[in-house]
Length: 210
Length: 271
Image 1 (tube, rainbow over the protein chains, first blue to last red):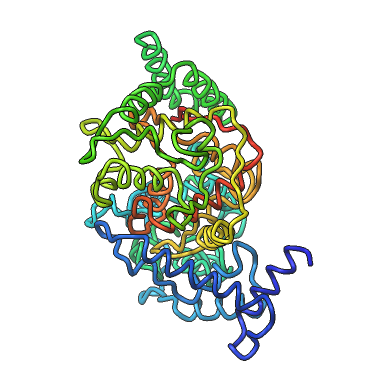
Image 2 (image 1 turned 45 degrees about the vertical axis):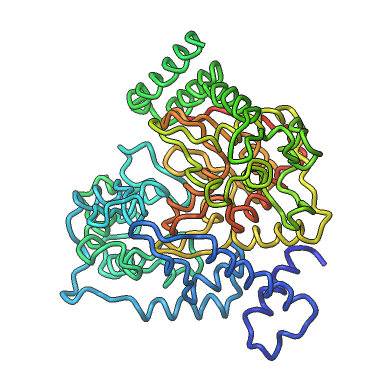
């Protein structure tokens, strides 16, 4: 059996209730996964703000690990997206856009949440690590798509502002198993910070849209 | 050696001109980085760690006042040449898979009489406190330079370690949902301007694995592969990976075996 199919078959078997975990290969793979997880937990020590509970996976982390970097089957993806979308906390004031200048600072800031970082902050999103944004910044990464002219290309609509907020808050709500962190969901950024990042993407005056 | 230092310093100065270079556009910035990296190859202070490691290796040390010269790194007692290109591997005397550092700890305990805890103490150096372990790693790995990576998967425990390491590579967790795979499972990606090796493919794994340990110019230290893993997890926002832990050995097995077939080329020098 081609390796890709095998991986998919194993992954599918893991995704269904225990009743189906009786076929030849699945228990073995599940066993390895379980052992890898417990070995990992025994191989780390808490350091600074990074406690051992960071190794406790939620449903998204667990399922997306099973599919080993590949897209999960449609029904699993839909389940993850639905659950993550339902957990998005939308701004009480109904406004999605803050200050793009502050958004640019947040997009540049790489510190935050590492055990070597000051727990009092600053905490940034380091958007430029993975995305192109303002054209003035040439030191950008390519793990994520270019966001240059994000608002200008998509239109400065209410719908797009809300989408940008939701995407930064919880990217898995729109794209299960994306590489992008869930900045709001995991408490990395505050509501105000997310609005500032949305402004960087959606404010017509932002350098991103020039 | 002094002339070499001057060349290293000149290379470091190149780094500071990068800011100016980027103004010309990204193409030239990438070129400048390539030039900077080429300049670095000219003189590698890792030699200092290699020499100190060899000296320490042959010194009588520890409660038993013995050297590490009869340490069996997998090719028989006393054989250092080529040993690293076959690690990690299963060791019958310990009945487990060990990477280089784990094996050195084993030899420090069995030959020199150190306690396991003492042998594991302070594995990563700083400017004011050099780590013996990094010197040992520099010496032993230097004795595999030019030798083809040939990590075995004959013993069931070697096969198991590889599979466990592979699972860990894809394990997502922490505040940012990161796994090793987040940054290292696709071709031709970068963080900022830093190229990322695709460690799931032979070419990427070979290029990355065969160039550690490395002297890090930005830190002024020689860094071992154990350090590389430890610092990746720090940036992944995980807690701290314990030195020579089971997970570190399994991950090393996964990455080392993916690099099989390439000539080992370290200690190297990196930014």
